[in-house]
Image (cartoon, rainbow, N blue to C red):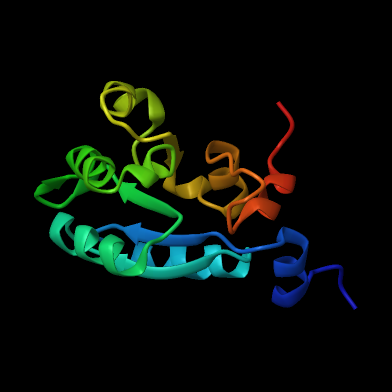
Length: 151
C-alpha cells in the first residue's frame, strides 16, 4: 500500500490531456519520452524522426504541442521550429526545443528559434512542458494550467 498514484489518478489530477507530437531521431528516447508523458496524463499523438515527417504529422494530427530535438541527426531542429510556426501559426508558443545538451550550450540556438522555450531531455515531463506552454481557458488542455509551478 504505497503512496504511488495509479496512471488513471495521475491523469485525473492533470485534467484534460495536451496532445503532443515528439520529434527526435533517437528511437530509444522517443519511446522513453512517450511513456513518461503518457504516464503524466499527456496524450502523445505521434512521433517523428525528421523535418518532413514532423511537418506531415503536424498537418495530419494537429497536436497542441510539438517537442523538437535541437539536433535531428543531419537536420536542424531549430530550422524545423521555424518551418512549423510558418506553416502552422497556431503552434506559435506551442513548440518546445529539447536536447541532451545543457541550456547554456544551446542558448543562442534557442534564442534564434520561435520555440517557446527549452527543456533538457532529462527533465522532460508534463509539468516542465506546462511551465513553458501557457494554455488559455478555451483550449483542450486548459486544465493542465493548474499544475504549472508558481512563478
